[in-house]
Length: 122
Image (cartoon, rainbow, N blue to C red; front, side, top):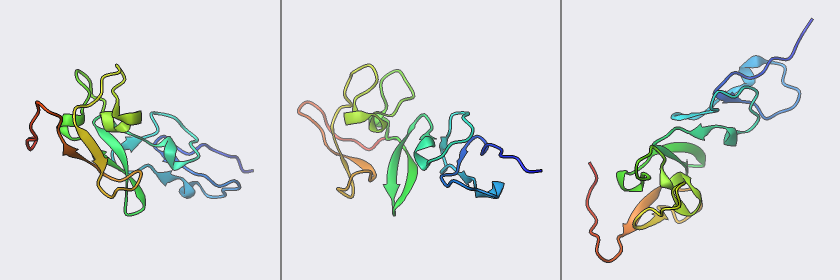
């Protein structure tokens, strides 16, 4: 007799009719399904705190958050948030843009507003 079992935590499988548990794909490095089983799409893999989602060479990656893009007093990366605004409503300082110019690319600090200077972060 056969039975269906859920794909384990930190994996996903998006096809109906799977007949092999090895078809569950691992989430990308530095991401997880946040302890959820039976996930069905790559987007169910969320980047860990201190990282943000970027598409690099056509694949989803979790990229370490630049120091200047971390939300104050938390481990949340503003670049993972809509419009780069922290959950408390505060915007991240600076003009951040996708390196490739395409949606989903790696984000870099392009410029700073008046009263600020750009420095390399440690």
